[in-house]
Length: 271
Ligand code: HH2
Image (cartoon, rainbow, N blue to C red; front, side, top):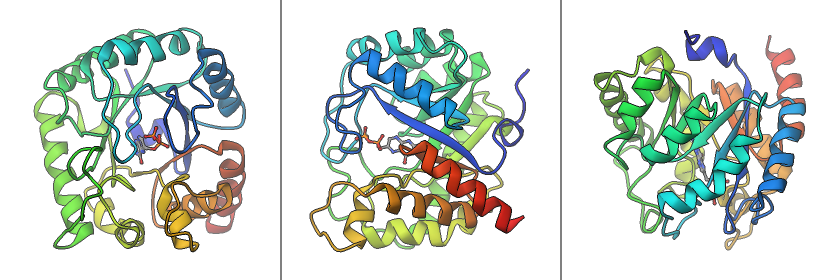
C-alpha cells in the first residue's frame, strides 16, 4: 500500500528534472543521451531530490510533441538503469506511463491533467501510482498566444478541482493526487507570479501543490530581458523558496543541490 502523498513527500520536497530530449529550453539537451540522463538522475538523488522526474517529450512553448514509440525509446533505457532512485514519469501517454510504472516509477506527472489520453486515468488507478495534475491553457503549440483569464488563480483552481474530480471518478484515490498551477503553460509573466502569490487559492482544494518555476522564461523576463527563454539558477532557487513559503509542497527544479540547501535553511527559519 502506498502512503498518502503528503506523507511520502513531506513539505518541502524537491523533484529533480531530467529531460531526455534534444530540445528543452531549460537544460538544452544535456540529458538527451541515456548515459547522461542516468548520471544526472543519480546525482540529483544524491543531492537530496525526493524524486526525479524523467520526461521524453518537451512541452516548451511552440513544441509539437513526439510519438509514444519515440518517447519510449528515450525514457526506457534511463528508467531501466535507475534502480534505487525514486522516479516520476513526465508523460501524457498511457502507454508510456504503463511501461514506466512497470519499471518502478511511482508517480505520473501529466501536464494535460488527464485530457491528453483517455486511457491514462485507468493506468494510474490500476497501478496505485501517485498522480500530478497540472493546469495548461490550450496546448504547447499555441498556449502562449494571448493568454487571458477572468481571474487567473480562481480559473486555475476551478480547472484543477474539475480534473481532480475526473481522476477520483476514474478510481485514483484523492490522497494520491497533487496539483500544479502549471507555471509558464499559457500564462503571462505577471500571471505566473500572481499564481504563486495567491497559492492559497489552490491550497484551499486540500491537495499538496507542486510548483515548477525553475529556469522558466518569466524569471529572465522579470529580471529585464524581454526575449529571455530561461531563468538563472539563482532566480530559480529564489522562486522555489518563495513558492515554498506560500505553501507549496513539491518544488520541481533543475538545480537540485542549490534548491535543497536553500529550502533546508528556509524550512529552519520558518519552523
Ligand atoms: N514544466 C515543464 C514540464 N513538466 N510538470 C509539472 N508538473 N510542472 C511543471 O511546471 C512542468 C512540468 C516544462 O519545463 P521543463 O521540463 O524544464 O522544459 P521542457 O518542457 O522544455 O522539457
